[in-house]
Image (cartoon, rainbow, N blue to C red; front, top):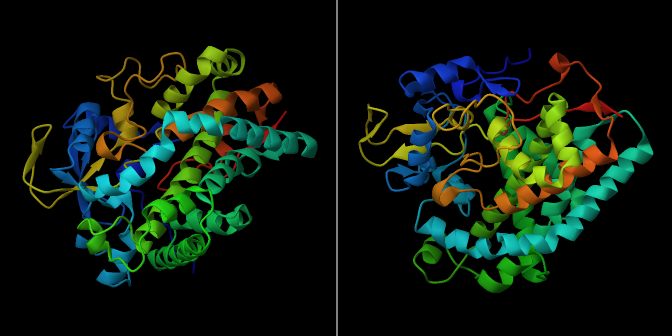
Length: 413
């Protein structure tokens, strides 16, 4: 018999574009509520914008480096295997180790460095639009446009063979799908780790001009343990290289691809907003920020663990408790922004936290912004009559994924 998918935890529940009404009720009443987390463990869900910012900004009282302290259901991995799998995963570290890992990559993701990529991103976008136009209407926007553009960009930037994209995209999509049983997701994680270790070995044998080659040439160290790297004996281990590269590969294509698909559907549902993005060059920068805020495709990010007794919104939370930040609720908080449930691409950033906040603010935000700034108007100008080929209620949303989006978006023009 087919196993029934698990019940969605509160922080992942959506009504199409919107967080469910119960999340708003938590925000407008107590602000913090005891809930069941994604993996069935008790946690505290923080729903207000200012409280979420405070949690994200405080890496001392709210730790990301707690993954090994919790045993997930049906997880067959030993403590040593889990420790190795988390090496290099910046989202599972705290300062000073997080600071050490992030400084290797920060120079590669500056706004100035991203601008050098702009001509190539324009070329990639145009190539995919050409292919869509040549194939003719209808098309599925997800595999034709939303997914391949950021995938090709991050593959070229990182040094991952684009020919392997079907393999790693399929693996990542299932690995991040809560409806897939845990043993299968663990097996997929192992496969992904083995794949990245092979790429690291290749980069060490012959480092290229890509980011993986740069990390090997400038920061790599043979035979070094993670503990030795953390103690300052050298810079980065092979396990950390594999972890950093895995994180960049997953985050580099999963997040932006889902924003391109879901954001296009949001604009199709708001023709006046779509016209601004298509026709007004000054509208696209604030539009990207508003779409990020309004859609908030990352539900919570990594769960934090309290390192001491804390108080949030008047609620006492003991040391050692899990804390989840409801980003969609925080970005729709009326105390943060007027008329929060309305999509208005003219209002701009306004301090949204869709890219996170604090030391874990998304490193790739400049790249994601550039990809969206180029891709959205290019798509809408090339196909001014773009329309959904399905009734809205039949469009398949990715309800069970850690990164919200669409399974597919059939369109005509």
